[in-house]
Image 1 (spheres, rainbow, N blue to C red):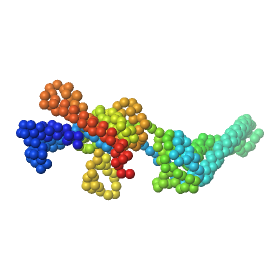
Image 2: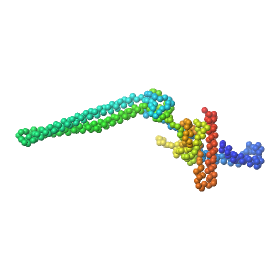
Image 3: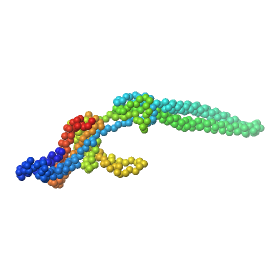
Image 4: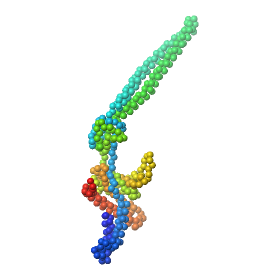
Length: 409
């Protein structure tokens, strides 16, 4: 409507003034309701052409959208295992801090697993104590075997020396028996050393491995038991949290609630038409007005333009996807941040806004070799942004009345 009024001032009004004061035609006589088209046909035609061109230029070079929101993240409160709720520590809409317990599932089987794992660790630790005692006994057996071997060797040497000096003083059979006794004691020493090595291997290799396995099993059991207590992952407020003792919680089918982390609004996400993809660039200046902050115009800047359109997203399934299922065009997602720090303070998360972006032609006008016609066009593109800025202010002024009075409840 505003564009039509402006265009009519430049086309229909001069046409009427020419016919009224140059040709002498008067309203109600030569210019009537039925002859207005014929009498003002040039002005009406030029007005329509100029209005269409102006509207196209304004909306193309200065994009506008009502799909601008202060999006925020939520965290689903769910357990890693299914179970029945035993205790609930917080209430509905309660503010929580990170790490604060929210509720606990029944954990009797998990506690039994922890006790079993602790008993396994204690059993292996006791085996280590027995192993050290066995090692001490094996060392004593080796010392005894060495003493017996030394005694047998001394007795053998004495008999051999005696038999060498006087063969008739001792039978040869006793010399052979002494040599056999030495071999027996040597074998006993080897057996004692082997027994000691076996105890060492068990004490230094087998038992530490078994102890590490048992401790890992204890840690696993303790981890499963700890998972029975669900804690908050961040500071925030609980929403839709109505658990009571006895309720069944399933991570796939029934979450416990939603946690809205504490955060302030630092930017907006806006969706613009795909036809404006070549116009919208990071660094563009824009303005927004939000329902939750009536009669306020907030300057923003484009910080990021998403280079993909959600309408073309696919994921592997067991069915082929027909392209006609993607016929509805998606939007260009743009991240807007306030030009001044704290401009969005007080804006509730999830609020809906109206956003305008404005194409700047200043840099293009500063380029060397810009012709007069191109300079005129660039000035015109920059100037018509005022129309969109005025429209946004009219929308901001009427938004409370439109929302409270004229919208259907």
